[in-house]
Amino acid sequence: MFWWMAGSAAVIWFAVIVLAIWAARSAPEKQNRRRANLLIIGGGAVVPTLALALLLLYGLAPLPAMLAPAPPGSLLIEVSGEQWWWRVRYRPPGAAVVSVANEIRLPVGAPVQFHLESPDVVHSFWIPPLGGKIDMIPGRVTRLVLTPNRSGTFRGACAEYCGTSHALMAFPVVVMEPADFARWLTAQALPAQAPTTALAARGLAAFLESGCGACHSIRGTSAAGVIGPDLTHVGSRLSLGAGILPNTPEAFVRWLKHADKLKPGVHMPVFGMLDEPELQAVAAYLDALE
Image (cartoon, rainbow, N blue to C red):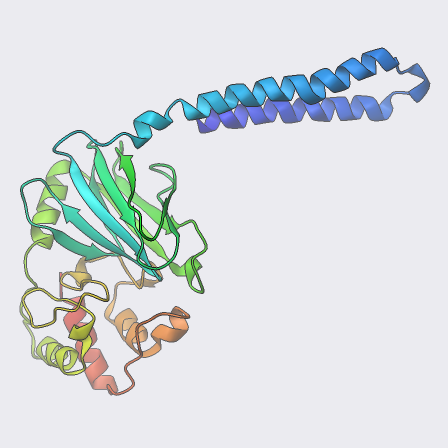
């Protein structure tokens, strides 16, 4: 569709430029008024109307298939766009719900049904290499079906201005082979692994004592917050802060110390009560949650 639209636009543009050059170089006294009027009416009204009508019909033709629900038994993914991150819930057929955040993984070659919503303002869900954008409207559920046909890692983003940190609201999309995706989803459904080092154990204690569990959930611990992202397997994600930081212990420390500067307007408070050793411990614990 893109190439047909681009090609048609190029043809129209070329024709307009040729006519403009011809008109600029022609002597006014040699112009035939009747022929000029026909050219203006035909080239300025009739031809554009017909061309745009045909392109509109061509563009609308695929919409029913794009908006139709996925076949029964397809994977359902619920995505909530929030200021300024993404809440993602997988609802595989016959299995428990799996909650992640700021990252989407898909099986190649399989249709996936997305249910999209927002609890605050209008966002727009867009994965440019895989499909068109669609708005996420408070109080409504919009739907999108995608069938990725090639594996790889792609960038998704919010395509509707939604506030201060709108430009800092991205998410990686990893399209995997079906067997790899099944293993990943099974692993994401498991509770968090217990700390395996003394540093990580201190980090878990600091995490819970500082009240992080009031907003964040880590399954397998007493942290059961529902306000912020689920952190059960945060160490396995490709980025932090909705695509603005690499997933490293150093980046965890930066986020804990300077969340308000890294993402202006973010609802997460900074943790000035934690000293540097405690921050390092929390970062080590979160980084190990794979």
